Image (cartoon, rainbow, N blue to C red; front, side):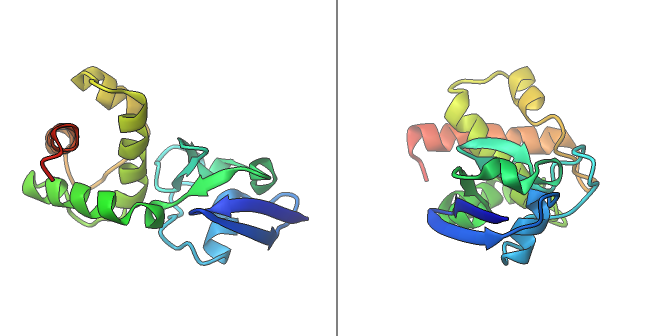
Length: 154
């Protein structure tokens, strides 16, 4: 099957199998920031943005993204670098394996929720697992990042 989609603002035509999952399609196309983790949609490592909303690519058939826009972390170099600095400042960044999916989820959340509460942030991030750090430092980093972006102090 020929999949026509847009990946990181570039139109792509990719040959896929009918039963192929998006994580495999993206990794085969060279987007190695899309990680394979649980293959059950429970860890968030494979998160990408589909038309601006986070999805789990390990549980999305590639055929379902026909004609849609996909964004991986490579589409947000400035935001990713800035967010990483906030994570580091709070001691929330350790191995970095979960960072691409986690960062994409934060970017999508910022576009959807303008002034989220701590509970709303944690609810939005539900399913993004980090095995290295606690979520308290991540929450602080997210709040500081959002405040800096809002005040354009970056």
